[in-house]
Image (cartoon, rainbow over all chains, first blue to last red; front, side):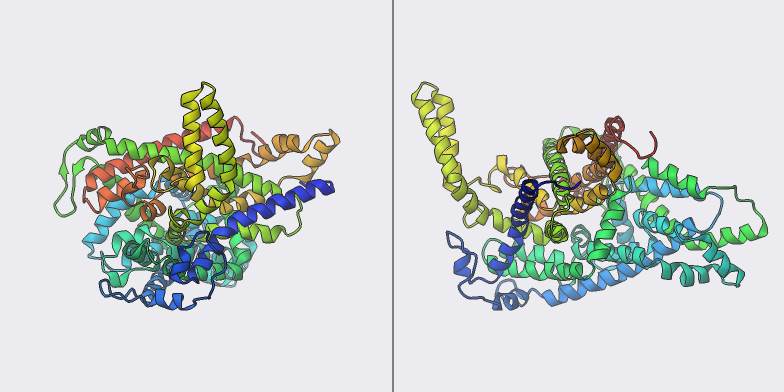
Length: 284
Length: 347
C-alpha cells in the first residue's frame, strides 16, 4: 500500500528513522563499550565515542588470564562450535533431502499417513522429549562428548522435511521420468537431477541449521561437562558468570566476537536469509 | 496446520498405488530414502514421548532405575508454590510479549510496505538484532539494563526527568489540595523514575518487563515475515477500496489484516509454543529467576529439576503439563481465530 502525499511520506520516513535508531542503538552501544578503557565504561553521563580505541580489549577477551580462573580459550570454543556445526549441518542437509525425496517424488503405501504423523510431531515441544533423549545418550555413554549435539541431525527433522518436500514437489515430474527412461537409478535421479535444482532450498536449510548450532545454548549446557569442550555460547555464558558485572568492556568485546561471524554471514547470504524466513513463516 | 495437510494430500495423492513389480521397487527405494527419518521419528520422538509419560509417573534420578509412584509427581506439582510462580511468570511474559510483538511487527511491516525509500536498508536494520545469538544478546542487555552504569536508565532518567518533574509537581499539588495519599504516591514514583529510571533487573515488579523489552528488540524476524505477507496482498483489492473512498485505516482494517490473517495465526501459535520454552535469556540474565523468583520461567524450572536436581520424573511431569497447556492454547488460538481468519479462495 503506497503512502500518498508528501506529508505522509515524510511521516513514514521520520518514524522509520526513529525506529531504526532504537533498534541499532544496543548494537552500537555494544561496540562502543567493547572499545573503551575500563574507567570509561563506568562514567556518567555515558559517552558514545571512547577517548582511545582500545582494540586490545578484543585480544584480552580472547586470551583472558586470571590467577584464580585460568585461561578461557575462546579459540578452542570456536573450533568446538565449528566442529559441532559442520557435522550437524552436513547431517541436516543430507538426511532431510533424502527423506523429503522419499515423501515428494516416490509413491508408496502409507506415505500420506506417515507424512501426516510427521507434521503432527512439529507440535511436540522439545522439553517433552528432552529427558528421555538424555537418558538414551547416557546409556550410550555420550554425555560429555559432542555426539548428542550433532548425531540427531542425521535422522531428519519434521520441519526441514516439510520444507524440502514442498520444494521438491515443484520440480516437474517429466525430468525424473526422462532420467528414469535413460536408465538412471532412483538415487541417481535424486543426486543428479533433483539436488542440483534444489540449491536455493538446500541453502536455506543449511544456513538455518548453522545458525541454530551457533546459537544453541540448552544443548551444550545439558550435554557438555568438561570446560574444555564448551561451545561459544556456553563459553560466553561461563565467562560472564565468572567475571560478570566487572569488566564490561571485555564482556562486550567477547559478545561482539560471537555476534560478528553471524552478521558477516548475513550480509553475504542476505537473499537466502530473507527467502528462508519468508518461506518458513508464511506456511499456515 | 490442518490446512497444509489437506492441500498437500490433494496435490500428490492422485491415484491409488497398485503393487505391481515396478511399484514394489519404488516402495523399496522409498523405504531406503526415508530410513533416517524412521529412526529419528521412532527413536528420537515417539519413543521419548512415551518414555517421558512413563517417567512422569515415576521417581527417577537417572542414577537408579525408575520407581513407579503413580500420580505423585503431578500431585506434588500442583501444590508446589514455585510451579505456580513459574507458570504465572510465563503467562505474564507471554501475555505482554506476544501481543506487543505482534502489533509492533505489523506496524513496522506496514510502514516498510508504503514504498518508502530505502526499504531494504530499514528492513536490514530491524532484522539484525533478531540474529543475535541469545547468550550474547542476554549479556548485552544485562549491560544496558545495568542499574549503576546502564545506558538505558541514563537515557530514561534524562529524557523523562522533565516529565517526571511535571508529574511530581502535579502530585505535590494534589497532596496539598486534600488528595494526600494518591498525591504522595505519585510524587514518590516520579521521584524514583527521575532519580535513576526503573530498577529493571533488581526489582521484582520490573524484571519481567525487562524481558518483554528484550523480546521486542528481536521482533525483526516477524517483520520480515509480515512484510512478505503484505507484499502478497492483491493490488486490485486496494484499488477497489480506493474507488470506494476508503481511508488508510479502513484499508488496513478491511483489506490488509484479513488477507494476512493466516500468517498472523500461524506465527501466534509458534509464539505461544516459543514463550513456554523461553530459557536461555533469563537463565543468563536472572540466575534462579532473581529477584525473588520474579523472572523464574517455566522452562527454567523444568531444566533445574531435570539436571541440577536430577528429579527427572518431576521434570517429565512438568513437560507433560506444558504439553497439555500448549495444546489447549493452540486449540483456543485456532478456535478463536477461525472466525476471523480468512483463507484466500474459500472458507
